[in-house]
Image (cartoon, rainbow, N blue to C red):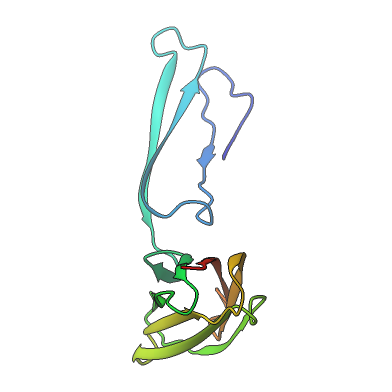
Length: 156
């Protein structure tokens, strides 16, 4: 997003502010903004905004788990929840809209900084399902994490 002074008098100065929404960008980024003017010597200038966005809490390998297999033999899956702050955090609860299909448990790997969330299929029926796990934390900057769960349970 760019904000700038619309009119700058000849020989004057103006302000240009370029921002990035860190809620939509993860990891390293490089963005370019081109500034156009009526200066015949230099009609355009490129501005680059570079950096790295580190999320408050990381989900490794990501915020999605897929449970696929034959009824009663669906492999368990897991993901790691990593606190990227210097202050410790706690997981205060986990809820799901799939309680008939999955069971979960949270293991503290490094107290306050790393947790492992394990998920297993407990479906009694063959078929597909999709839903969410809602992980609540005491981190005021990221009080809830949403993990997408997709399941496919076959007969054999």
